Amino acid sequence: MTPEARWQAELLELIAHTAQQPDAALGLRPAGLAVYRNNYRVGLIETLKMIYPVTGQIVGEEFMTGLAREYSKQHASYSGNLHRYGGSFGDFLQDFPPAQTLPYLADVARLEWAVHRSYYAIDQTPLTASALTDIHPEQFGQLRFAFCDSSRALSSRWPVVSIWQGHQPGQTLNVNLEAGGEPALVSRHAGKVRVQAETAGMAALLLALQDGQPLGEAAGQALAAQDDFDLQAGLARLFADGLLSHYQL
Amino acid sequence: MTPSSLPAVAGIGLRAPHYRQVMDTLPPLGWVEVHSENFFDGGMPLAMLQRVASHYPLSLHGVGLGLGSLVRPDGEHLAALKRLVDAIKPPAVSEHLSFNHSAQRYVNDLLPIPYTMASLAVIASHVDETQQALGRRILLENLSSYVEFPGNEMNEGEFLAELVARTGCGLLLDVNNLYVNGINLGTDVQAVLSALPAAAIGEIHLAGYSEGEGMLVDTHSQPVHPGVWQLYAQVITSIGPRPTLIEWDLDIPPLDTLQAEAAKADTILQGARHDA
Image 1 (cartoon, rainbow over the protein chains, first blue to last red):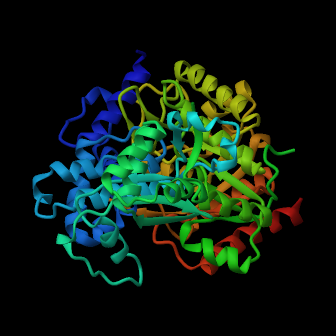
Image 2 (image 1 turned 180 degrees about the vertical axis):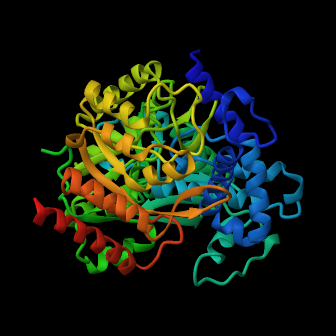
């Protein structure tokens, strides 16, 4: 490593680790290093607040700042694009003791990440049912699908969709936390991100397909999860809502 | 022929609080600039930017490629930038002469590079790689810096001039950054300016700093300061009119405040045209 590359690498570590004292040989003025350290921390915290507005509303501004600060200490940025930072915030909340009094918070954050990724996701031409006309019906069960980057299904033990919707502008929160889990589907329509709760059968179908399982297997799981599930209508929705990008046989 | 096809008038940095107003009312703006990363991938942001680009000359200004990082540029980031440039086909594409990552980590900031012959060779190859990937010339911007590599062999202007000579890139001269470095680091502003090849300067940035602890901080949160206007007027008199951007990124004021700042820059640009 050249002295120049070493200086760059050490400066990056010093900016991220505020307790470390710089080696005098790096020639870093303390006031200058302080500017970068402050930029770094504030930048990551503000990014998390932007991506997770509902989580922030639930816990309040001050607690959210604390959560974001702690997360930013544990999780480095791995991209020059800040829109990609913070994807594991939900997992962090799941395990972070001060957040345990709100057991649904982690799932709300996971839903917010899916909404964020959906909003910025690349534009793809969704798969239509007519793309499958050449496939022999006996092979349908073996079909596997890739979801569009803007589509994502999530399961939850909590009514996360009602919680999320109740925190949108102009909405009032009316949630019974004991009402049971709401599986969520995040999808994008004319640029707008849609979040909706799904039935147990539809959720099982979506989650199995998203997981890469073949259609026959996914259909079986959907019917096992909900015995009156309308499989035909469920399959039609995959195409009508433009959730899929590719198939593989 | 300057290295960008933006008009040599004042434009503004278009930021989220003004998207709706600009799209609904299409106010008279010489041109606009956005941060490239905010429009990566697709969806509504990209669709909106395509509409903006159909009404105004548009400049894509990257804040995250970190071309000055002495490890290889991030291929995924460059690919996303290429998709955006291909979709928009803007009159100008710019990046900063800064670094933001090592093999271990990213810091999403604009960090100053060592101005040495050894880093020049590496960074020139990154500029080449970027220009080849994008299929076009890019403009590189000088930085506001709060620390310096202790073994610098040249000033930032000399380094940029070498990059222009080696890669054919253009320059984006940020007058506020230069002014701030003069105060914070004791940079010889006139020496940097005189090192820059005037013909390569395709765009100019103006912004307002704020006063931190013993430092001027390039926050883009204020009107352009009088000392920066003075330096800008000197530059324009010396090199002639150039596309000039008013940048404001924090505590963003109403659009008409930005337009009033742009009008001041236009007055200086017009003065230079009359004198020519």
